[in-house]
Image (tube, rainbow, N blue to C red):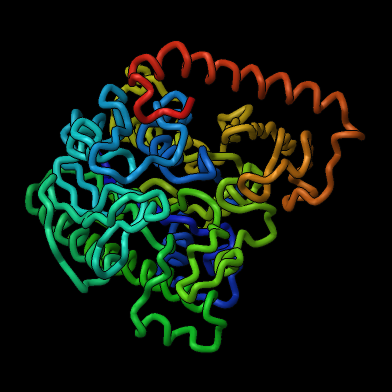
Length: 448
């Protein structure tokens, strides 16, 4: 069989409501809207974590974060270990099937040798390895309060490179287009992972993008500008796919790693109040929270040769489904790998129900489960480091996607059932963490 090409676009801290095809009325993302129209737009798609490193680990490995060895945000020192080398990624699996594999953008799954992209199946890569960089100098500043020195963080195939003054989103476009041209010349199927750092802080965008939204207040204007730059980038990359005659045979997936950030460091004017530039739309919560705003993502998938156009899918899906979905469609054997995700291609091609009976999440003291339309959150937090809003919160998402009404007292039987399932799952994660991952890694990058 002819193997499809794959492109995964991932944004950083983009909320459920920050895409015009998802309902945003004050910003425009025409290229992403066009991708959605050419395939399927998901209304109930989830990240597997409300923060970046674990969510990226799940996307690439097809596992829950605790089963991939990454449960927390990883640091940015060059000695920082990350995704264990023994855990296969979709790049590893597809390369074994003859794929050319590439990454252009943000890694954030470890900087130490053994944790880098070349150690996880990527033939070529260009980008940075820490959690965030200045968009023009490509310097990692985060952690200054903890006396972590600033560090230049721009690399090409493991070698440090310098492109001072060039806007990183546009550098991603340049390198991704070049990868597609090279792959076309080689006449091999390809997997291209394009994890943008936008719209993660620092909030940087050239004036040509900001001028498109001159009527918006500053915080929203810069958010819209950064996403508009991403949208232009997606458009340029997809235009190269079309130019190479590969549009019908290329499967494209787009999503965000977690919900919008409210961190005060998003501001560049010294303000210490929470940032309000991103939005989760009607959802409750944001980055770090296990309420819907932290984990339900804007998402779409396009594959003209297989996926019918113009679909809106309200079935549950999650980032960990990409590994088994892509592998199965490429002719690989999913049973060769330990996957928590499922092949969702029948869901978007034939309209079958979701393969998930339950989806689970954990973030420090928070635990959550979705079963059908029921969503249970235990110790759910809206603000980091503050007391939980509720010890137990139950919502019927079909009636209340914003989780505004706590139904725990009126449906104690459902609470009991979902709590038992959630804690059974959580306890298995904790047991594996203590018995395998912590001893295996000597605790070096793993939270106790």
